[in-house]
Image 1 (cartoon, rainbow, N blue to C red):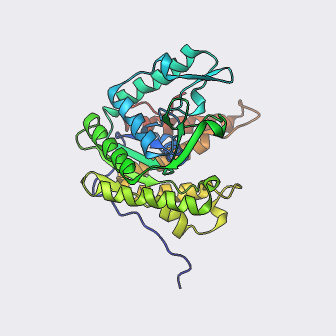
Image 2 (tube, rainbow, N blue to C red; image 1 turned 90 degrees about the horizontal axis):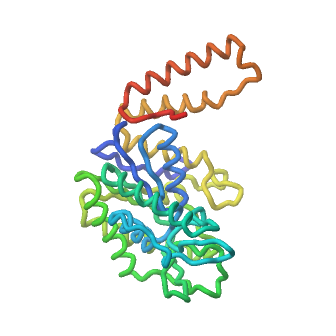
Length: 318
């Protein structure tokens, strides 16, 4: 007897290896997945522009990274004694214009360099809605809590969505490794502030357009992350207290599903052991001279050294 409709991720013939580089961009769910890649000691860069949600802004970010196009003073605005970029998350805001620019441009340089060696790109779209900043007639990635009266909110048109996703793929294929694999997901996080009906419309436009565009590219694939949470984990016990964001149990379940489909056997073993080591590293004691604790640390360091011998990149950085 079955009590749930399980959603599987189709196994990929091409697998993620332990030396592969993974670039992720998009909604907060992209960051959740990237954190697990990082914990597994894979090489990953996530969201050089901070968390962004809509395909237009994500395409703008990828284009700037592709061109290594630095930002300049006239692209920032001042608000509440801080200099901000409407293309970026609020984490880039500072009180000094040169500091904001330095933070932004350092990430562009890092992202451009990483993309040139990237094997895998994961893009997570969150919404089809976008805001236009009226004073500059500019479509923005983040409103930075500027009053709503300065923005016009609307859904991206089907053509805007199609062009954004298509251009993103073209730019990634140009800068990344020749055999780069691009994986598209739609965030399972519901944008309830848009309204429940509006959220469903927004997500459906994303899913439809992604499928239409990636059908033209052999190296592009859709991951049913949205469907796993909506149709497989259909229970609020898999959500955080806000009843919107998936909790750690749900994220780990999705990551496990993803790993079964995309990680090589060597990568699975490597990541599994690194997760265990990370857990052990959290152990604390009141007596660091305790012989048992010293022995525990020595054995743990030996396990780390074994893992370090498996890869060329640096892992378990202090």
